[in-house]
Image 1 (cartoon, rainbow, N blue to C red):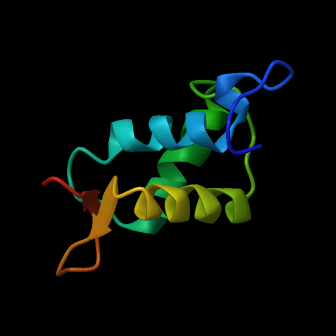
Image 2 (cartoon, helix red, strand yellow; image 1 turned 90 degrees about the vertical axis):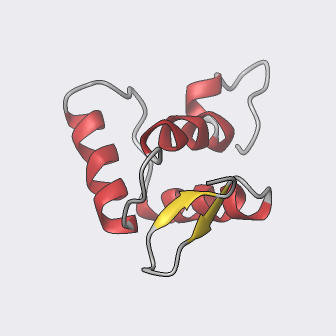
Length: 82
C-alpha cells in the first residue's frame, strides 16, 4: 500500500499520494488546509483515489520520515529544504 506494485497503481499508493500532496506544499500550509485541498481535488476528480484521514496522516508521516517535509515555527507544513 505504501509503494506501487504490479497490482497497485502509483496513484493508489501512499507514495503517489505523497507526491500529489507535495505539489501543493510549495508554500507553507496547515494540515487542515492540505486535507481540504485533497478533499476538493477528489470531489472535482482532480485526484481519482479516495483516501481516509488516517491514510492522509500516514502519508504525512512518511514524508516527514524521509525528510521531505517539516513543520515551521508557525506550525505549518513546508518543504524540508525550504
